[in-house]
Amino acid sequence: MTTSLVVLVSGAGTNLQALIDACADPAYGAKIVAVGADRDDIEALARADRAGIPTFVKQVSQFASREQWDRALADTVAGFEPDLVVSAGFMKLLSEDFLARHTTVNTHPALCPSFPGMHGPADALAYGVKVTGATLFIVDGGVDSGPIIAQTVVPVLDDDTTETLHERIKLAERTMLVDTIGLMASEGWELDGRRVRLG
Ligand code: GRF
View: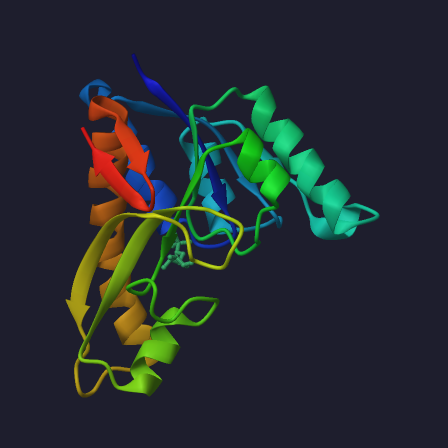
């Protein structure tokens, strides 16, 4: 059985592209049924268009409240009947209601629980850690706080800037994302407390 994915994006969409490329192989076991964004005119949506994947945009500013935006997003996602929602560079927090309806995973460019939030690479660099990385986790009600599915480690170099460090993280992050979603799709997974087991 193929695992249906809805991917949520806000920017360049390099993680999305890695998933699109992986899904081209039927043996991967997953298919992207739609790509959703919280803003227009982003490269991630262009990548989905080029791959022939349906897209939708829900901007917070189009709704009277954040709650209405979140419900509209959840309803639209539900229309595609995904097995899993992948938040890949999606820069909005999702409500408990959304998460109760849709099992959602997110990738964060730091080693959780360190450096949660919008500035993971910059915060890691400023702190002076010698290794950082990326984390794939099941989204809960907090900020980058959910059960960890996979992590990947990269070195911090003496001459790194936030940009060079984030680029190195993103290389490793894409591989982790593709490998792990593929395992979840083909082997299944289970949650035991905070511990996620694949296969
Ligand atoms: C990724 O590093 C993601 O973890 C972070 O923003 C970046 C998104 O990159 N939240 P892209 O849009 O997939 O290229």
